Amino acid sequence: MASQDEVEELGMEADGQKLQLSCAEGGDASSQDDVPAQPEAVSNGEDSESEKEHVEFKIIWNKKKYDVRLPLDSTGASLKQKIHTLTGLPPAMQKVMFKGLLPEDKTLREIKVTNGAKVMVVGSTINDVLAVTTPKETIQQEVKEEESKKEPLCRQKQHRKVLDKGKPEDVMPSLKGVQERLPTTPISGMYNKSGGKVRLTFKLEQDQLWIGTKERTEKIPMGSIKNVLSEPIEEHEDYHMMALQLGPTEASYYWVYWVPSQYVDAIKDTVLGKWQYF
Image 1 (cartoon, rainbow, N blue to C red):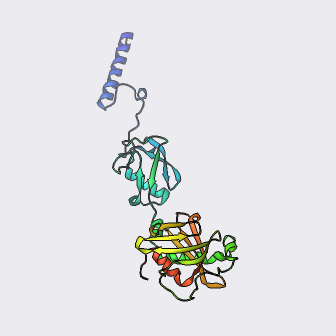
Image 2: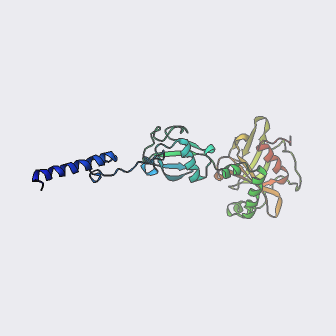
């Protein structure tokens, strides 16, 4: 029968054999439970969208504001594409400004766009451009159609108070259906908006129109007159009421009533720069 020392020696030899067998199979002497498994890192070559640093700012275009959130490493070209998505404004037609004109090759980080910043955009959409390039004749036709829907000027209250005075006794005779050159003498005998007598003298050599009343004579450079409007007077179609636009708004119209119809076209062409009548 083996002694106690012999038993212990046999046990130690058995443990040693187990250890050698484990090493020979490529195992580790320590238990795998003692070392937590490490997940294998997988990269697709890019940071995920959530990991990118973003900036939030406002785009201002055509009096409208758009809230934008983009990665700080987005370029100016990328921002233009975003603006196109929001506004329909093609990148090639955008002028983007942030501390000067925005460079397309710089990132938002490089040009120091910060949260809450305002980026200004100037430009026109394709529809805006097409509207501007619409043939002049088409626009004029649309204006005429719109005007035809409105109440005739001679029926409006502001003009009736003058027209109701009737045709002035000393007004120059009219020739309906005839176009004549401007006379060498003033066109006289007409009324202005206040009902006072007025005459028009065309000083072609000075490129001026003299508007004369009993009180004074105003010498107006023809180049400063923005437009000339006219309309036949109902039941007196051989005479017109006419407006000379002396400023940027309708409030600047100088109204003249009972203009002989044969001079209307010559007045318009002379004031607006067409000289075929002379």
